[in-house]
Length: 430
Image 1 (cartoon, rainbow, N blue to C red):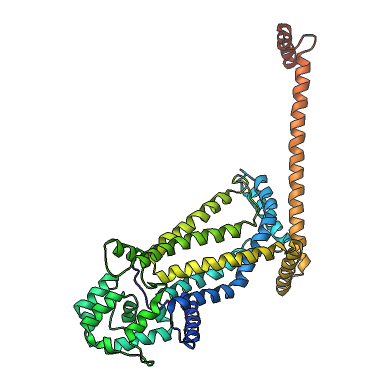
Image 2: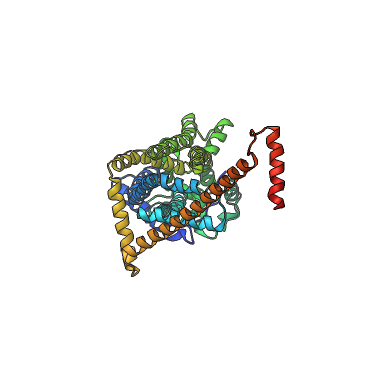
């Protein structure tokens, strides 16, 4: 269940991951001033820092959601108006009217997506750093480098080393690259460190600048709450059930508890996030049913992935969700005091400034949208009037025809029917 690790993220994630690495390195240096070097503690501090840094984006997204809840009745009215009308003219009218509603509130159709799009690469980069901390934090990496310096040449082809690589699905890595060696060493269990030390006794005597045994120092950094944060819950539980001596019952319980807590805390934070939004029926808003399902399935997916990811990532998810709960309570209290009219005014003001930078008078865009909408409404009213006049004329002709054919006879009688035939012949023989 272990995933193959790439030493550092490249492409678009590279710069984001590098920034996350600098933050993590700074936290290790900060805790080391107090004589504490612990990856689990630094993950918790890292989570707090990231939540604080992303708070402005979170607020922006929540304000957008609150504004959307106010706009929703108008948008739903437009959707109902054009329900079942798939012709090009109706679709264009619907788009123009929808755009006019967004402009009325000083926002855009993509306004709520922007904060999420900004957060996505940050989140992916963050998980990348969590998965392989030594690649980004030199304060952790230096301990592994001390071990590698004492390994003899050709160690990568030894039976013990290749066996460890196969155990962690890293057998195909290029171990002439020392970054790949660090990737593997970072994932070793206590017993596997013992196996490596038995094969290469030189590493047992490696000491750090502080006089600590390097292997013991690495194990100490990775231990948090009786567990090694590089282990995966699935492997811990599997080995414990098999009766392996590597893991105690306490470690197995924590390995089980981390994924469960991750799902529960994520579910509750999502519930808090949606509690301030108006409840609408699935018929009024087809997307509501999908959102309800996602609010259930996403925490369940979190539980599933947490079993196959290192415990350090599970720890991050749990702490992140707990902080999200606290943060959401504060955000909900803040948004409950926000004047929606003032929020709309601020949005319109910002939109007007953007228009001014494009060389357009602010009122010109609004007037244009209003005039377009007005013309569409007038055209629709004329079409509706024509349809009503045509229906009324049809009813009038039908009434006149019925009265003509039913002259001098009781309506529906045999005489009336005979009279109708006679009148018909008379009328068409003229």
